[in-house]
Amino acid sequence: MTQRTTMRAWLRKGLAALCALACTVGVAACGSDEADGDHVIKVGIKFDQPGLGFKKSGTYEGFDVDVARYIANQLGYTDSEIVFKEAPSKQREAMLQNGDVDMILATYSITDERKKAVDFAGPYFVAGQDLMVRANDTSIKGPQDLNGKRLCSVTGSTSAKVVKEKFAKEVQLMEQPGYAECATALLSGIVDAVTTDDIILAGLAAASRGKLKVVGKPFTEEYYGVGIKKDADSKEFATKINDAIEEMEKTGEWERAIEHATEGTGYKPNPKYNPPKPDEGE
Ligand code: GLU
Image (cartoon, rainbow, N blue to C red; front, side):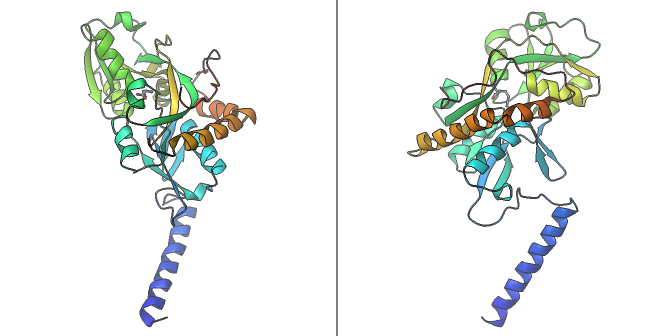
C-alpha cells in the first residue's frame, strides 16, 4: 500500500466514523440517502405526506415507508441498505424508467394508463379520493358542491385527472407539485378545497391542528401499488414483492403499521377493500 492509498483509507474511515456520529446525534440521514456500497435498494417515497411518506430530520416514516422496509427486508436488504428518494407524483414513471429507483411506494395508484409505462406489484392498500376544506366551511359536502370553487391538487396525480375529466366545467383547478403546498393554499384562502386520497388528506388535516377537515365521502377507489421498472424480470420481482406483502398482512404487521400511521387522525381504512390481496397489480 502506498502512502497515498493509506491516507485515503484513513480519510474514508474517519469520514465513516463522523457519519455514524452525525447519525447517532440525529443531524444526518441514517440508512437513507447515504447508504453505502453496492448492495442497496433504492426506494421512491413521498417526503411531505404525514402518516404515509414523511421526511423528518433525516429519518423517514409513514405507512409507505413501513411497507417498503418490510418488502426490502424480505428481499434481503437491511434497513441501512435502503436508500429513500423523493418521488413526487409527476416524476414517478420517469424515475422508474430511468433506473433512479428500484421500486416506488408513494401513494401510487395502479392505473391502466400507468401500466403502459411501468409495472406494479400489490396492491397493498386501497384508499378513495376525497375532499379537504377549512374546518369552518359548511358549503362543501361533496364534489357536487364544487361549482365555482377553487380546488387544489397535484400535477401527475389521478386526483387531478378525475377533476379534469369529471368537474372541469364547474371547478377552477390549481395544480401544485405536492399536497403540502395545496394544504398551505387552503389555509391561506387561495383555494376552497384540496382533493386527493382520503388517507393523505387525513394526515394533512391532523397536522393542521383543527384548521382543516376531511369531507369524508370518498368518490373513487385508489389501489396503491408498488411501482417497478417494466423489464424482463419485472414479473418475477413483482411476485417476490407480493409474497412480502402477503407475509406482512398475515403476521399482523400490516395492521400495526396502518394503525400507527393513522393514529390520532380519526381515519379508518375501508374494511370492504382492506387489506387487499396483492395480485401483481391486476
Ligand atoms: N393515489 C393518487 C395517485 O397515485 C393520488 C396520490 C398521489 O398523487 O400520490 O395519483
